[in-house]
Length: 282
Image (cartoon, rainbow, N blue to C red; front, side):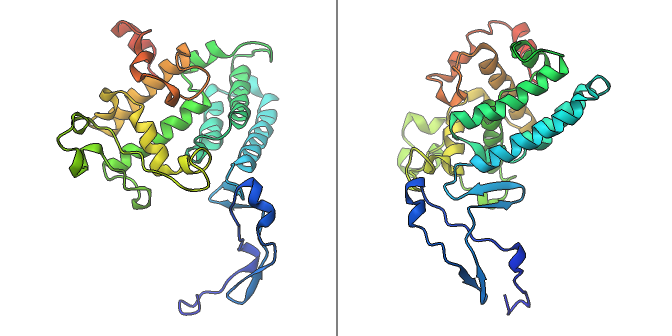
C-alpha cells in the first residue's frame, strides 16, 4: 500500500474469519495488524450490499433484506391504492433479487423468509388477506418463486461465462465435450458441464455453493433446447418459461427445479403451443 501511496482507513476496514459453526469458538479474536493498524475481527462484513457472515450461511443477509423489504412495504401500504404494480415490481427487483445468486443452496427456512416478502407484495397488489393463497396472484404477475429466481440468476451467469460475456473471475466452466478423454463418449455430443469436486468445509454445506459447482449443476438440470440457445435473450426467455412451469404446476415439489429427477418431466403439463404461450414469463 505504501508503494502505491495508499493509506489504510481503519474505520472502513474489516477482517472476517470464516469457518463452520462448530469451529467458530476456535477462531482467534485478537486484533490483526494490517499496515501497522490493529483491526478487530468482525462477525459479518458488508461488501457491495451483500452481508457475509463468518459461517457463510447468509443468515445476516437474509435478515437484513427481509427487514428492509417489509419496512418499505409498510410505507407503501399506506398509499397502496395510488401505487401501481410496477412500483412493487421495482421493489422486488431492486432489493429481493439483488445479489441473490449468492443464496444458492441456503437452508429452506431462509428461503421461506424471502418468499414471505414476495407473498406480501402479491397480497398487497391484489388486496388479498393474509390467509389467502397467492398461487393465482403469482400466475397473474408471472412471478417466479424465490428458489426459481435464484436458479434463474445462476443459470444466466453460467450462460454468460460459457459465451465469454461474464467477468473472468467467474470462470472457467468446463464442458464435457472439451475433455480429451470423453471425445468418443455419447456425452460429448451434449452441452453438459463437468461439476468440479469441492472440498470447502464439506461438500454438503458450503462447497457445493461455489459458483463453479452451483452453475454447472444448475446448467445440467436444464433441458437441451434451453442450454443450446443461440442468444442470451432466447436463453432467458426459454429459461423463464421452463421455471415458471415448474413453479406453477409444482411438479418439482416445493424445492428448486434442481431437485427434478428428469427435467423433461416438467413439460408434461404443457401439451400444446397455446399452453406454452400462456406460461411465458414477461
